[in-house]
Length: 135
Image (cartoon, rainbow, N blue to C red):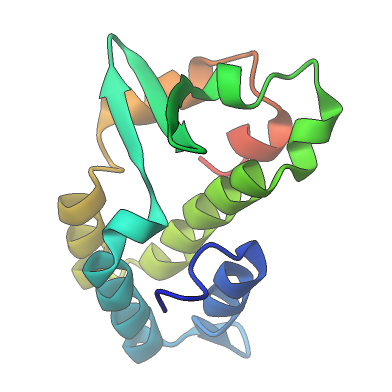
């Protein structure tokens, strides 16, 4: 997990194995969730400062709108932004089907269900749609 964790395609693969024939595979969801929690420092480096959600991009803390300005279409394919989008999508896949164990595990480890964080991302109209759709 640790070696492949910065590859957005690896996260897509993890998301795909959370389901089989449109059914949630709870055992896979839980296992992947536990691995994410065990390697959380490699998965999502972010913080919430002064009402803004910030990401670590190349060892520099930037607000999401600074890291992925809407006016720069190249950011939609920037590796850091693709990775961040896939992390959000994977979190959703792990919690799908009301998997309360994964919901609690991810919420406790990553604070992703913090209302302030979710609202700040959704309200940030300077973000490219590729990121806003992941929330």
